Amino acid sequence: MAARILDGRALAAELRGAIAERSTVLRTRGIVPRLEVVVVGADAASLAYVRGLESAGAKTGVEVRVARLPADGDEGQVRTLLRVLGDDPVVHGVILQQPLPAHLGIRRVAEAMPPAKDVDGANPLNFGRLAFGSGTELVAATPLAVMALLERSERSALRGVRVCVVGRSSVVGLPVALLLLARDATVTVVHRGTRDLGSRTREADVLVSAAGVPGLVRADMVAPRATVIDVGTTYVDGALRGDVAYDEVARVAAEITPVPGGVGPVTNVMLMGNVVTAAERHGPTAHDDRAS
Image (cartoon, rainbow, N blue to C red; front, side):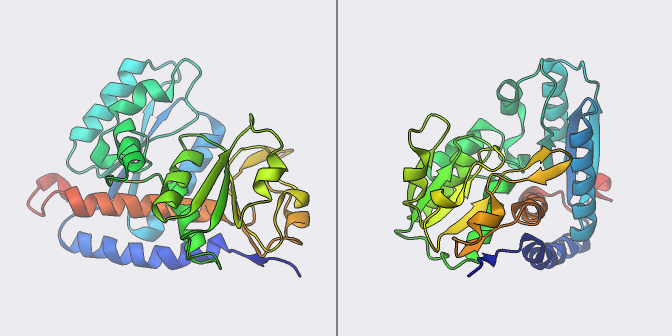
């Protein structure tokens, strides 16, 4: 029996409506939810992603603007821009588009991201709060998308469920693992240094792959009737491919997300939800002249 598809596009459409309603309420108070995307240089993939954010913003009532720096912009310029946006009361969310030019490192500039406007969870302060389970202003959008899809799956009751996360990056793998642990799942994190990767993944009721290696997860690495969430997005010969060998794994798993059409559409909506949340918490009053 073929696996049930966890449809990210359908879930995104459902979530958009609720976020748009919240945006409408804010606008009646004179608050326009606003996201600033900081782009350094003109990477083609980054610009395409920004267009996707602009589309998601238009559908959820979030104003999306782009703050550009030249490709040779230095660390000081990036940090200064982030600080300026952090001090601007009509800006509610800020993200730093990646990949950055080779001479810049996200770790060196992420600490300048204003924590209350850090809608994609880049600031180490927000990550640390998540790690300590003490609450955080905002959680990165892709991990939130993974959790939203799991909540619509057969494994939504995660307490005691065996989960394997493939990938340990601070962008997806680690925050997903922390969110799963907060739901009392039993979590194993594996990575490129793990010996006999398949023996670990086959133990899981839920498999989340965020390695960025096309076709890494094969059918013989997946437990029968498992739920598989594919976070991987890599272009191969002009086509977007996930970490999971979809056709063969879909014959083994109970549920699976496609690529494209799985985690990606939900990620953009969760990002807009974070912007609206930040506006609800910290937005200017209707008396602020710059809010109009």
